[in-house]
Length: 237
Image 1 (cartoon, rainbow, N blue to C red):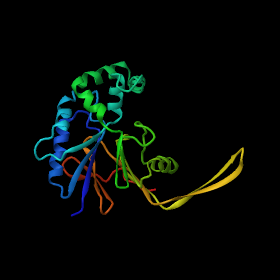
Image 2: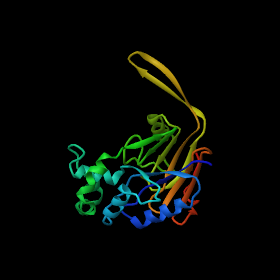
Image 3: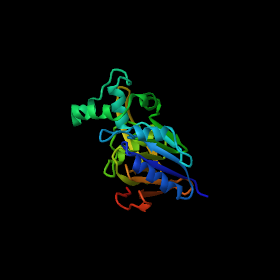
Image 4: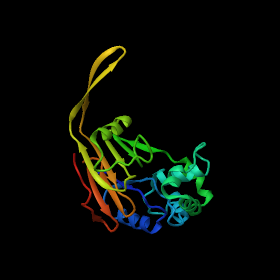
């Protein structure tokens, strides 16, 4: 049987959607692992019920493997759990009311667990990160320059990068080729050539839109709650 991964993000406290995804996965053959790539919380609703469920899976649930996302980063920063940082990005983009709403959406009892989550996972030759290897808020999309995509893959030394921050579902393939660079410094001039193998960047979607990845066959399936395939947003480059 082909092993499959389920990749989810952007639930933002929506326990109902999470329960529907769990129900779908129980009916999906071969799904062995559930990765949740951040943004489990958000300011729109109280997130405590979802966080409790993630930390205490029910019998029969596919146990979630979670990393933190942009919203978790903003909360932890504002609560003083990221050094001297504050939720400046959230404050700048959405104002003080959004910061207050986020603080009110998550009980402080969950902060220790959220702070313990990793930035990302490396599984086989795949990187699983909310944004990218450059930053938690890196917004990789189907329109992102191939040079930027190659940089993000190279930083992790992986052939596939699963990302979630853009909330889009897409699959971009970088076919084999090479990069030529010409460098001039105090020691003179030099040329370099970097071979680029076939690599992929996959946007997994958010909320009710999630992704199934077949590990053995390297196939990606974009779905939405209810098991419906979502064909929008796919791309190849």
